[in-house]
Image 1 (cartoon, helix red, strand yellow):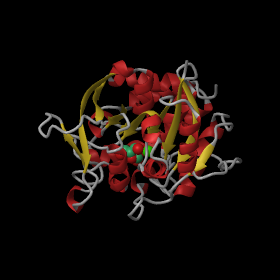
Image 2 (tube, protein in one colour; image 1 turned 60 degrees about the horizontal axis):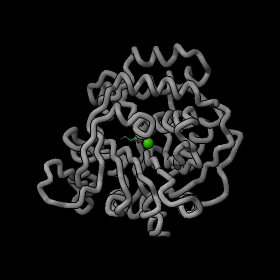
Image 3 (spheres, helix red, strand yellow; image 1 turned 180 degrees about the horizontal axis):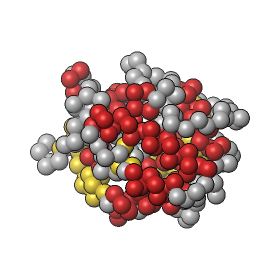
Image 4 (cartoon, protein in one colour; image 1 turned 90 degrees about the horizontal axis):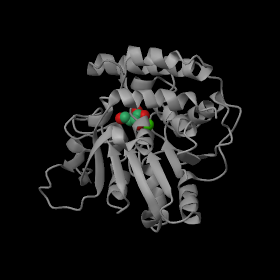
Length: 314
Ligand code: BDR
Ligand code: CA
């Protein structure tokens, strides 16, 4: 039986690869809905990018719900320097002909979790955690009914990609992250320590392009643009393909290494705002609230990305 998932997202291309991979994996995953949030770009633009991506592979039947346009208590900080002005620079996709479905994303998350069997829904959270926190505030019962939340975010020894201490998704809305990490819901976290090993190298991008379909050609160019910032600024051999690690983990957990630890979110001091404070050695004897993925087999990961992204059209 396939696992029911909701993906909360703010596309940038790595987000789109994530939900398209899920669509390319119908035997393992059933994508119930996509929920959008303000993040890499504005909420309007993340929603447009989501709809464009679905249309690219002809999967417009998947409902898309718009959520929060800003963090719980702070102004939105976008990431256009990494992904370009519309979050999708590098390949011009046509404007979508479809629209978001009626309803506010946090309400829809609550509805889906309450209407399905307990422990039957997993959320992949690949953006600031605002929508998830709002849903938990609205209906605290969902904390116990969710099977798991798989989050791309945070960093342990790698350091941050926005500040020395913090990764983007957690930095943008640390109050929301705090609500999620103290919820008691089982959490798997994929931090930068893992995703900075998941690089779109030239050789991998050529392999992706060689599939030869229109959508693979589009992602070849989008991911190539994505590597400019990271190669120059962070001296990497290709842009990290962050978000698809969440879906890859659901499909093939055996390609990751993990450890159960306590993760606490720093929100009160500007210098460590959004830092995931990870008690790797169990010094504080705090609850082991998070399964942290700290390493992966990057070749197996990228092969899986190419295989399932190629199948996204169904
Ligand atoms: C995260 O930030 C976004 O730009 C990516 O999509 C990913 O979710 C990486 O820090
Ligand atoms: Ca993202």
